[in-house]
Image (cartoon, rainbow, N blue to C red; front, side, top):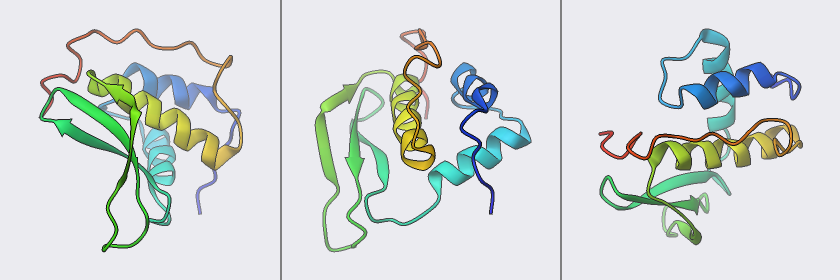
Length: 116
């Protein structure tokens, strides 16, 4: 199984610069690993207003249970929302925070807003 090297900040920077791709093979492997795993406690993005507003959510791992929404983390830019969930998944998988290791992106306000 692919293991994420927490020192590969170059992969983080590659994702950050193009959150919607296209991605190089090594970046794809890293993203697949971050997105794969148990459905229980999986972090997801939930669109609460079509193409305008997203919140973070957590899956319970059971189909009969609703997604737990974190309305304190709301986004009006899909790229910014993707970056936030990427950082949280990175910390979950590697045990290391990206704070202080990479600069926060300044995504164009329209980036991702009309992405369908």
